[in-house]
Length: 455
Image 1 (tube, helix red, strand yellow):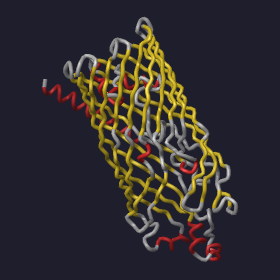
Image 2 (spheres, rainbow, N blue to C red):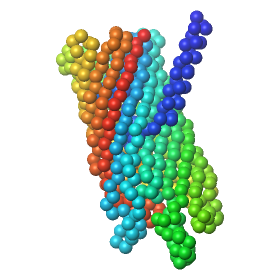
Image 3 (tube, rainbow, N blue to C red):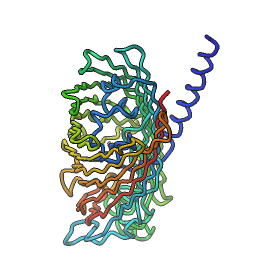
């Protein structure tokens, strides 16, 4: 028997290690407000995640509300994957170098579609230990972004490639205090990788700090003598989450959860590429390969909502999510060399996300249909703070989903979501006297499949 348990543990470790590798290395665009990812349950995506705080019919309760795990009577494994097709396009209005009235237009194209197709997986497991205690474990990604522009686009001095990869390990426990009331808590271990690249206008620096005629003779002209900077780093952070679940009546369930902020100290390697006619600027430990450190606090949030069965086969649900994005005021890279700090001012604000959904269960319990709508606020506070690295805006989710019971123990969920995004004005000034002026048009299509196995 002991040997059998060791074999089971060995295979579970292999599964979690493999999934963790996949989660870390697959591309992840931003899909929630800021850099948050909502895609934690295909079942819940079908109703815009409106039933998430009271859901216990799939194992994503480990993430959304660990207290609801106490309602599970069997071991439950949920494995899900999401395919995401984003469209993120910049449209130039009056991007310029120097002053708007006396400067010159920024050279280059509009950058192409900065969005990339992506696959996001997650896995959750719930295990009732006693009549009152239930254990759970989740491997997922809570934050992420990835966008890439053409190398010669107008905003290359502010952003070329921007990527954040994130993986979260979340063991949890739930305790059933009474038949109707439960508490739950979890511990989170997060690993994060970041990659940021951009061009450097050494031509502009030459004209500003050296004899302009000498710059002209060497071809070191603004926007025509670019270098390159790349910053790659990683970090580990720790946090916690807890929740409460209450069955008010046979038809009405209430739930709430809190997920803590997590501080990451990102240690990065910085590589510079400098044109031959700009090597003079590397003197004094400027623009040389070095290391940097950036501290960022990923926000805490509060989720609460209800689900109400209004008829034997109809259930309505709603929730609200508050996220403490105002913790992120700026991203500052502190270089180990004499290179001056690189600062991206964001001035993000706190946000709310509201969701509503409906679920229809067939009389045979063989299948279910659901739909939902959500309004997801952006933390960006204005055009002057909208960065091409994170061109975020208010989003409107319209979703549809289904569940089909292959057997009493195995259920399949499918869902589709379309995200409508407001046209996003940008008027962002860079460090090279460049100002990116225009607007973004964005939309997202998301499809997901999930398998639940009760055993």
